[in-house]
Length: 230
Image (cartoon, rainbow, N blue to C red):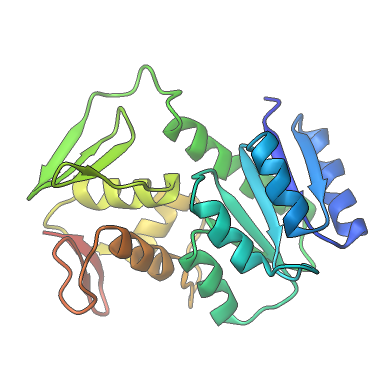
């Protein structure tokens, strides 16, 4: 295993708790108390995954997430004591892959880290034996083997989560996929009522594809039912 994980949290007890549980699973963990220190760590050695607290002394976790997403695609898990749905949507729309509120169960955090890393390592070119599957829909090309997406010949940089969402929908072209099915297929967890995770990721995916908000060309919403790629 031995993947590097970056934990950014100014609460020393929380950072130490996360570090202990992750190291017990074989991960290497680096902790930072500020966004500035985290950005320096990224320059030295990008991690396989980052865990970001929202409330940091020098820059909020949302802004740090946005900075990271400018150059990196590794998974980001947000941690915060704030429970408002809008905070969750904000984090996810900026490129975070998952979100947990404090207090949290450390075992659940470890489980989510493992899920995110499985997806990322598969995305990151480790799938030499993957099926040679490619899909093309009106200028949108997506390759499962290369985990690469292009639109009219121009590469679209997607996070592993965004890629999995698009691939799942494209594989079912013409069918309406309920949000519950999409969430459980991509995240591997039971879908809960009022879960805005899928909606936030769909919005970010559309933004990257340059989709007009009212009349998207590729990923369309069927209100009250789900999402479809036609």
